[in-house]
Image (cartoon, rainbow, N blue to C red; front, top):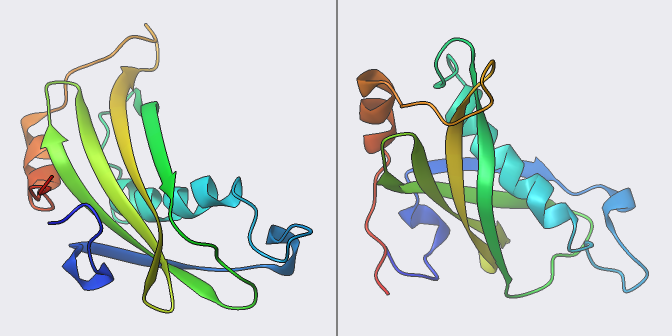
Length: 142
């Protein structure tokens, strides 16, 4: 997969509606909302069926790098593509793209860690979770 892929290249797809309240005085969607769009795609992966995290554990974001490429305008919808790029012992990396009408508006790289709810420290991903994540694994061409 390329660093600026087409939406169709992503193994996971979601969409979100753009609300009028999402816009700023420039008439486009405020950059803070891009994180909300990423969350929409992320939750489709992590919680759509049964949660992927272990019992008594949660997923937390350790790192988020967001590159804004073009503006998004109201009204309409956005499409969010998501793919796993790395599966580690207690964390994994997620690559996402946000699109409007087929045009790439942003890409993001996120590192997500499984955290034990009691100790508040990282905890290993189960082999089952790793296998579920690997079905969405892609290699990014740099």
